[in-house]
Image (cartoon, rainbow, N blue to C red; front, side, top):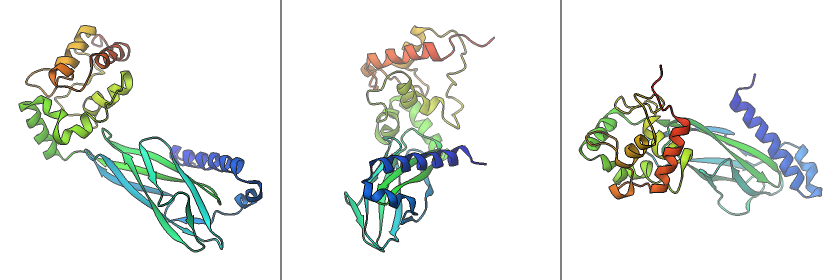
Length: 257
């Protein structure tokens, strides 16, 4: 029985083959029926990374087993957070030739494992490569050091080494996307620090003023920084209002009975 990930890979291979066959010149379509001569060092890889890294980097190597050149025209990634860099465009492998390409996945604000695919479109057909990024959590010592630093200066989370995880992913996002980038990194982390509240469990009534105050001002002598721009935070008033609206619709406003 296929796992969901295996099923997704097989589905993508099928879609890729159909897409290539539809766009390939008529005289080359018959080649799609033969095994693809591009042989990769692996069709799926697992890449280790550490929480706090900006990106995970990996390589796929390939050999051309055909008796004629094969042209790799492009490598399409499954989303914008994954970037593949071919050594040339187009990338031509001579008969018996070998080569490799480098790819990176943006992992800022991510934890645990996640799955990405890359469609290799060539004159010999289409293939799908896959990578699982396995992100290790922060070492406990680092977590303790960061907590101590935040208790002394809660706005430190927006500067220095913390900037890449807590500010860069925010950009101009609003609403749910902004929550994922700015809030979930701490409040829905796995594991979540004991002193960081679970926002999906209300301790008391939470109205618009509650959310606006907490997001804008934070709270002294806690890990909660002030996200408002006038407090040195990264969020505009419009972004804060979008979070307030999202929170009132998506998070409980009263404690569970």
